[in-house]
Image 1 (spheres, each protein chain N blue to C red):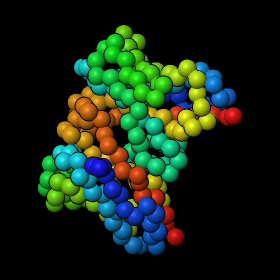
Image 2: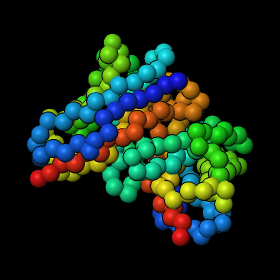
Image 3: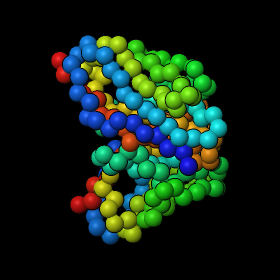
Length: 114
Length: 112
């Protein structure tokens, strides 16, 4: 079955470390998105990509980086510059860049700073 | 810019009660509207959608009607179950390159 796979499900980071969250889709979707979810704050857009080798900053891109070398993959790196990285991270994809058909979401990665 | 406003909750109901979760939006043009559901520790799942005015989306007993005159897309269910306990997100796409705009989510708790 087609879908989005996020890994790992749980991730622990020490202060000052960079960590990379994986997002892979086999839906042949063009666009991919990264969101951060904090309690009571809904979803906040970190980065998005409409095509391979191109991506744009969302509302809260500081302290994060992404790459889109393959259509299927959109990994997110949480750098040491992100001062409060503990959150639930969600990856999504859509057929077109405007989301007219809705998104498919992964099951999320919970990142905790220890 | 586009925005979505929904009641944040938590909304607590007894089993078999009638549910309404209000959602209103601001957008230019003719957005498509969506409701997503998130169960604890999981990603979001598409619950229903409507793409033009007066369309009714429905799924698993939930319904929502696209009301352009009131810019609303309220979610309703006639008889809720404990298994409906989750967070519900209203969303829209106005055609921008950054995709969907989400409301902050409504936490629904159904008590037996």
